[in-house]
Length: 362
Image (cartoon, rainbow, N blue to C red; front, side):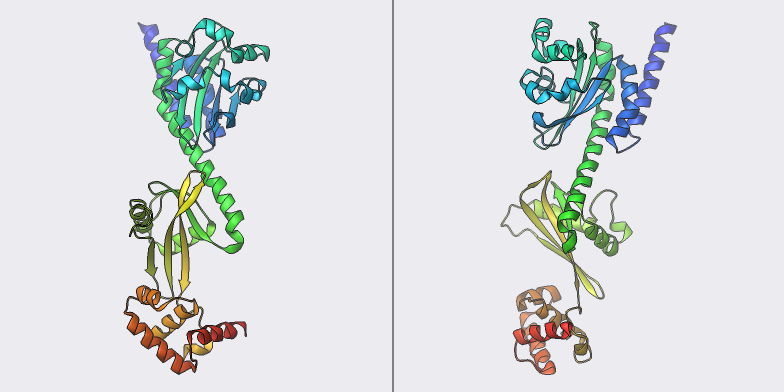
């Protein structure tokens, strides 16, 4: 009894150490460096590998290999149809399976992948595997091996099953960070010269990546109580949630604005015509100066409201858009525009825009 108790105590300590290692980093390689040796202690495996397909296609699996010759997976694209592990675990995600659940012993020994493993010096006589995540976007799976005929026990499978949720969560978090980092870099490369401020989103309102400009505007325009760790500020999250809830072409809100003393922040929601990785929507953030388009020589001649209207006209906005943005009637906008024309000595919107452009160039 004392020996069984000591064994249980050791297993409990190893399990706790695994859980601690899995939460120690958001770098997948660092996590595995810490957790993998402990997993081998938990189930007495000889080797193993964690595979991730960023596209969700089996031929694109990237193998993070530990203590197993790289040649084992080098020919994997040609071995896919002989893989006896992946189809079995994919059918039962997050459930730990043993080789006996995947193939009979005779089927295993006749399998081309099994033979290939022996040929490259990485025999897989016994297998324990689990699919951690599987959808059209990406997949991940963990497989442990023994190189001798010594089957994994039901107890070892149970011990492994108890840590699978934590492993799956750690891999998922690391994957999300990796996706965000890659898309963040890609967005900056694509849009950096244009200074666009964009946030990529996946349903229902999960942020995938943001450009530096978007991060700057969010930090500038939202109070601490509106910010949520790892998520969009509450007003933007509400805009996205409402827009996502309605089909394209409906009257769902597509814009949100916040007016400041000298500028207005405008957030525009768009569904993407095709997915960018896991993202299917984006927010475009724009800081619209109230008076920036107006030449300095106009400042003394116009009232504050006339400055707002003239700036909007200089941007090419229609009377209807100006009325909506300023919260007044179109008739009021028309009156302001006529007053602006009279004060500045111009006869039309085109002349006003041209004069503003000429003044800025000068």
